[in-house]
Structure formats: C-alpha cells, structure tokens
Amino acid sequence: MPLSIADLLVDYADIFEEPSQLPPSRAGFDHQIPLKDGDAPFNLRPYRFSRIQKDIIDKLVQDMIDQGIVQHNTSPFSYPTILVRKKDGSWRLCVDFRRLNELTIKDRFPIPLIEDLMDELGGSIVFSKLDLRSGYHQLRMAQGEEYKTAFKTHSVNHWRIMFVIFA
Image (tube, rainbow, N blue to C red; front, top):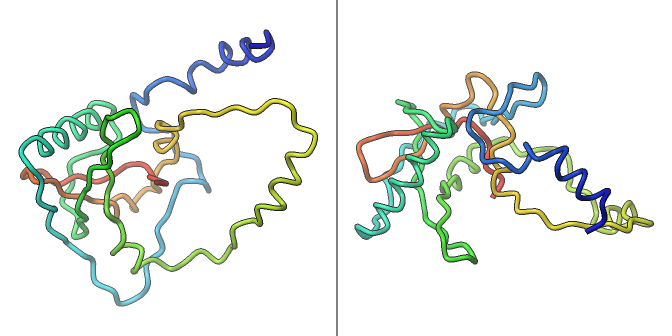
C-alpha cells in the first residue's frame, strides 16, 4: 500500500469505527420523508421467524440500541423486519419499507447516467473498495420525521430508526 494512502487511513480512522451515537444534525441535509396527502399510516405486524432467528433479531436490535441508532417509539407507523444473510455468514436486519415507499412522494431528480459518472473517473489511478456497513448510519433523520421509520419485531417493543437505511 502506498505510504500516502496509509497516512490517509490513519488520519481518517474515525470514519471506520463502529457508530456509537447518532450522527450530528446537519441543517438542510437531515433526511425527510414527504408523504402523499390523505394516506393513513401503516401498522403492519412482524413476519414469522424461528426461535433462532428471533434471538438473532433481538441481538441485532440490542446492538443498535447500545449504539444509539434506534429508540423505543409509539408511532402510528410500523413496518416488519427481515433478516438477510451476508456473504460472510452473519445477518443484517432490514426493515421492509415497501408500504412506506407507496406513501412517499417520489424524488423529482433523476439518477445520473452511468456513462457520465464513468467520465468523471477519467484519469483516476487509485480506487478502493470499502465496507460501508456503518455508512448506512451516517445520515440523520430530520427532527419530527423519525416516527415514519418505526419498525416492529416479535418482541413487545416498538422501535423507530434515527438514521436512514439505503439498502
């Protein structure tokens, strides 16, 4: 590894640490979920899981509570969770927001063309592949928007997400 790259990794080591608290609020950049008028919130029941999977879900939720990225909630919204196996054999907890997506006013800005993005890489000589697992927890929900991200697990608890998941 070139010395200049190693120096960058040392200088920005905090980027690669596990999140231990909510990201800072960034005015104008905190995520909002605009909803269509007249639609009622969904409160869906959790999916069925085996006892082993329920234990995995409990552990993953407890880890997120310890990190401060989920909180107890009593929102009128509630979405089920699913477990997705990662390549390394571990599990990722995902929230099934498909019903929320139906209520959401769609963004009016198109995704850039891949050709344009590739043109911007012209002349680049250093590329990296990062595990952005914690990158999902870097954009905070706007104040007052958190209730829209509530999810349920099989336990009695009802949680809301304090960050945006782009998975």
